[in-house]
Image (tube, rainbow, N blue to C red; front, top):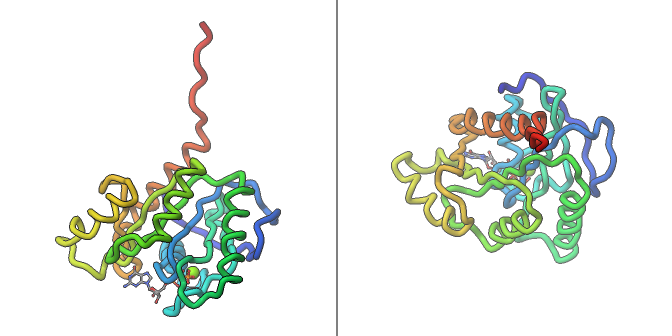
Length: 205
Ligand code: GTP
Ligand code: MG
């Protein structure tokens, strides 16, 4: 799959009906500053589609993008941003819970973690939340350009152990080098494909 077309659809503080809703969705979650919006831009080869910033806490709303006119990519606000107060934290929790509770079209959640760091408590909470909700997810280890290729396994080990995934289930990704972009597109295609092809019906006996 390649992304030939990408456009911004809408932003919202609370998930609800929007124009064109009903297409399959892929959501992007992770700590603030982990590279969610940058990943969306690189995936679409568009520099300013999703707003990014070197300062954490850039994305504060649910941002929806339409890709290839076929599916929605949902950029969610990051967690674990130290500077937010209790009220903002509560708002974030409600926004996220509301989204995951109300979306009917979610096919896959990309859970981004920084390859250089062990998962934070918030990362593990998100991991537990996705599991509890029975939502299919894919762990994407971002900023892979910041470490050498040879060191990848060393960094991936604690991430895999704590997030209970196997190393081959994790995509090492870099928005700087484009590493992992192909693998990610393949994973998206697969998740969207499964949608189109419902499991074959059991033959009647
Ligand atoms: P919030 O919107 O605050 O939740 O953050 P975000 O996860 O959307 O992060 P964003 O995409 O805005 O990126 C944060 C910073 O990390 C920016 O300065 C990016 O340039 C940088 N960054 C993102 N991805 C990569 C990457 O793969 N490699 C490197 N070296 N830097 C990256
Ligand atoms: Mg962002």
